[in-house]
Image (cartoon, rainbow, N blue to C red; front, side, top):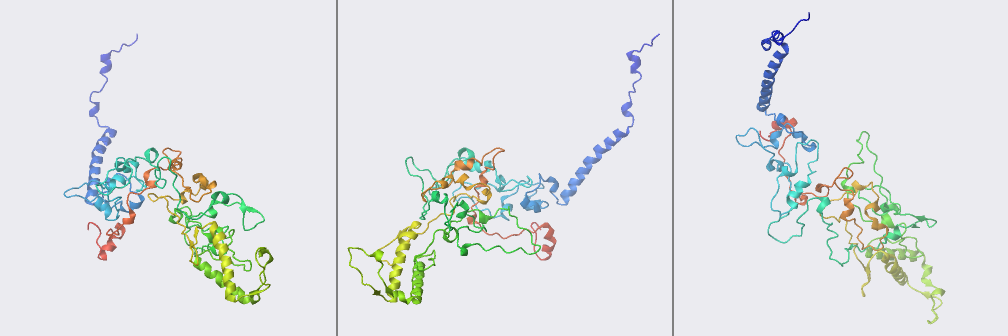
Length: 469
């Protein structure tokens, strides 16, 4: 006969005092819950007494401030009767960094920490967010005073950024802005295959044959021997290898083409068939003195040419025939040859590129200054070296077809927005890429007082006191 089990019978098997029985796991859990909080409070208290505030840090410092990891009080200046402090004060920042203001007409100066946010790891503090700039420039206001031209509402580069200032805002129907340079250059002709120094075949010029950065060391293809750069000296044994990919300030801007570097191989400055020398590409006074000196030396070595025979091709039927032989003095010969040579130079050779003004009664003409502009973006910074991987024509397409040197070949802001835009397939487009808040032309030198922790003992021994001591 099967056994019958009731609920009451089964319940009698349960030990109702099981929770009172000692169990190893429960005992360890009790002591851990008791000891760990006490240990944490003791550790925090010990760090507080030792003035080591690293446990309270919200994150690692940037690369520029990593040395201050254990010196929190250098930036977070404690207030009176306060154990924990607020954000870093502007006074602490300016004790190491000058940080001149942006504009004297600005209504208020933002706090340093509102733009340069620390404790985010190895980030660049200069990489401020667009919100930091938009807190003022989205609705810009200035102090009462002289009128200043500015855009009142700019929130980001890709939304409402105005056109570059060099292009301005010309009224409808007006001519586009012009380049004030006085040098005549036909870009279209120079970008076509042309006869080079070797007339046997044509040469295809490249942009870098005329336009390069200041730090470029590459030899010029169509320059004179004197214009070739001197090769860099060999590095000393054991010297660290230079970083060829690091940003170089000397590569930010492009230099203006120079005659001796870019033009002299094709554009010859010969002035007389008797002489192989060319005049220097210099001021008119230097050129004149050079021509006179060369002719004086030539006639001194060839005195027989003072007896001149008339050239048949120069005789005109309406004029009487010149005497069969004309004898002149050396001074007369030099003066006549100089006048002929300079007529060729000023009237044709130099006039191809330069604006020349001849004034009656003046012995020498006046050549206008080149009047070139080296830095076009006066309100922003642009680094050509950061764009060295792109073809010049990708940003300056008009250079391939321009036939007027006064035509402005700079790219407009729409060209920049093709690459600088938000999203994973574009490059950085925040304001700090081209603009800086602080006006570093008004920078002032500071008196440094900070002593690193690793040198603090030595510095105090020499009589220097570390901050807060």
